[in-house]
Image 1 (tube, one colour):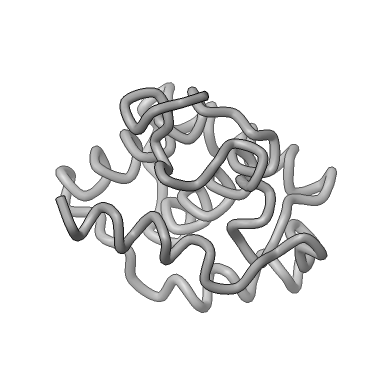
Image 2 (image 1 turned 180 degrees about the vertical axis):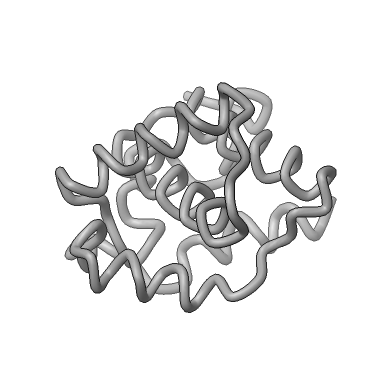
Length: 125
């Protein structure tokens, strides 16, 4: 059993991670995600749109694979981007582009409102 120190999305259980978000990566999306991730870690300049897409693809990848370490890394990247003053802006347009390019598809396991469980927990802290 994991506690909230081990589970970055506490109180959501690891087995429920794939149900958290409305979209999942396609094979093509996984390839694009790996390219963006590599560019980010090599400290290459990313556009705002690419940063938005990295945020989205990273969380879909990490939760879809039930990977706690990757979820923690996604959270760190989001904080780092915010610290660089690269805030989420026009996320809807970035997400729509991912859909149009078939980089993400609807998640059949998605449970609406499940992620809110985590958000509500964090707000109480």
